[in-house]
Structures are given as structure tokens and as C-alpha cells.
Image (cartoon, rainbow, N blue to C red; front, top):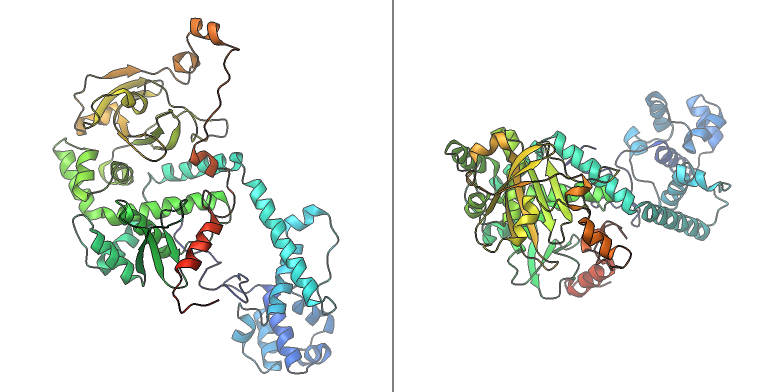
Length: 500
């Protein structure tokens, strides 16, 4: 699964006819409909067109029905016979709403989902009333939506997470095309070094054609909302994280993200927007220079990177994983762990073994109690970074960790490296050390014998699902987001001149 910044074929800038999304490139169905439309508009019969191009009427009918793709030489003959250009025939837009609906139904009936229903096909022709066509297409869309929603199970989400993590590992979590895009945007507003201020972030929004609007009633399930029609970005008033939320929203626009069609695409888009946002906050060239100087001095520190760019510890830790292997030749792992011990996010290319389910997914798994990411929750002094060496089944790792609060509880954010690379980091002299035998259940997953004997069969806990776990069971295109609430919000804040 390659992460790409190339805009998908279906783009919000080209909604098609009456909101029907269309492909950028014409296919045989669209070409055939355009030929038929031009022929009938000129009052030419099928037989007359066939005679003009030296083909049998049945062959022309097959082309018009989209069941055969004409060669370019045939297209030139047809265009000449219809007093049109080849470009007229190859336009990706269906000639009318009726044609767009017919094409959509034809495509659906030729697809695997319709075939799996074992239903007889509907003949798409003049005899099919337009209202019936509208209803059938609407039903087909709803069937596809329900099928996609049903497929978006926790299992599908776990598979998507595992596949995305493999892609990130294969690229050392470094995406040069996103780095280049960040450099281009920063040059556009003249920001070359130092922390990005809220003012510069606003200038970047203006550079991209957006105005900023800070509101008190932002939908509770969102960090920001973009009104693409009026080129507005809505952000929460007096929020310390509005700069990051703004950049992530703008990143999705810059990268041409369309409404995600499945959970895997949703995850890819989130990774891309987060990456580009961090690359804007901590530009590659300057950040790499800072890190190389720190490495030479054997004083690498996530805290220093955080302070140099006025970002959160988590953002600095993420950015370090983008640059450490590519520019410093240091393999690394990253973890964000809920206070319950559950993995919220994780990445590695240094061989550390995260707990995983049979599908290879690690989100939702419990981290060993001996790992730095868990031990740090018991440290009293949370103003200082915590360092620890941990002997594991895959080797010895040094890790630095901090605890950050959120509306969903405390999280630890950790960055670690194999023992051989510890010499580059501040905190390498720590005497804190632990041993982890996980995934051996006797390490920390199974209660001590006497405790288990006393309580086995007498406990019935009720789990409290975390918001991210609910989001992994997606409903709608944007998991965890109340779409109705978002639409009502946009309706409320639309400019007065925009009347329905």
C-alpha cells in the first residue's frame, strides 16, 4: 500500500452533473453515450452513422452501449461523420444528467457487488422512465454504502492499520514528496527558519485562498472544519492547538484528499496530513541541521526539538521518527500509550517487538508493564524526562518517555532506540533498567498464581471503550465524526449571501 499525494480520480473540484462524481478519464461507456447524444442531436440514425464509417449498425450499437472501446482511427471517422472533434467524443463529462445516471447504473450492474446479489439486470434504455432510473441508482448507492459500512469492521480496521505500518516501516517513515510539498508551501509565505507563529500559519491559509474563522460552537467531534464552497476554515476559539489543527486541515486540502471510501484510505489520509503538518512546523533542512549538531555533541533530545519549534512533545517525537533513520542513520521506535496500557499509536524500524494480534495489528494491544511507556506513569516527577533501558526478547532498548494529559486521560509518548545507538542521546547514563519477557504470558499478562487462585471466576469487569476503539468501527466516511452535526454547523455559519 503506497502512500501517494497524487489526487484521486474523483475530485471535489469536479463533482460532475448534479453531484454525480465522474472519472477524470473517459471510459467506453462515456464515449458511447457522447456518440449517441451527438448522433441523435443531429437527427442521424444508427444506420446512417454506420454507413458513414463503413461499419455494420450492430457494431456502432455496441460502441454506443459502451461494450466495445473504439480505436482512435474509428473515433476520427465517427467525429468526422458527426461534424465534431475527437475531443468532443473523449470529454469525460456525460452529455446529460440522464446519461450520467444510465452510465452509473451500467457500471454498477457490471460490477462484482451486483453480480454477488444474483439479481436479473435492468435494461438501460429509453423505455426506462427517468423517475425509475433515479430510484434504482439511489438504491444501488445505498446498497454500496451499506456494504462498505458492513465491511468496515474492527477486523478490517486492524488489517488496514497493520498494512499502513508496514508501508511506513519500508520507507523509514520518511516521505520525500511530502517534504518537498512542505518546502514549496513555506517558500510561498517566506518562512524559512524558526518556529511557525500563528500569524504565519494564517498567512499560509490566505496564500491557499482561505479565510480563518474562530468559533465557540465547533462540532464536538472535530478539531477543525473546512467549508470548501466558501473557502473558510473554522477553528475553536482560544485553542492552544489551533495552529496544528489549521495546518492539518490545510494539508488535506493541499494533498487533494477526497472523501475516504474505506478505513484504509482514511488512515492513509490522516498519516499524510499529520506528516505534512509536522513538516511545516519543523522544516526538514533546519531540523536536520539541528539534529546533526545534537548528534555530533551526543546530546540528541526530543525535549530540545520540541522547544526549538514550540510544538508538543508528541509532534516532536513523530517528527524525529521521520528524520532519524533517513538523515542520522538511527533506527527508532515510537509509542503512544494510554494510561490503561493500551497502544494508541506505534511505529518501529529497529526490530523491537510490539504486542500484536494474529492479523499483525498492534493498536488495542497491551504493552508490557516493564516497558518505559508503562513505567513512566508511576514516576512522580513528570516535569523531567524519564529514561530507561529494557532487556527484551529482541534485544536491549533505551527509551525516553513523557506523560501528557488529554480529554481521554493520560498518555505516555515514547521514543526508543537499540542499545548500540544510545550513545547519541542525552539520558544514556540512566541507571533505570527493567527486564521484559513478553510475549511470554508469565511476564505480566497472567496474574500471579495466588492472586489468580483467589479471584478466578469471581470477577466480572465492564470495559470502558476508548474513543479511538469506537472510531475503528467506522460509521460514515470520517470515523468518529458526526457528519450531521458538521453539516448543521456549516449551514449556521454560511455567509448571509448564500441562500439555499
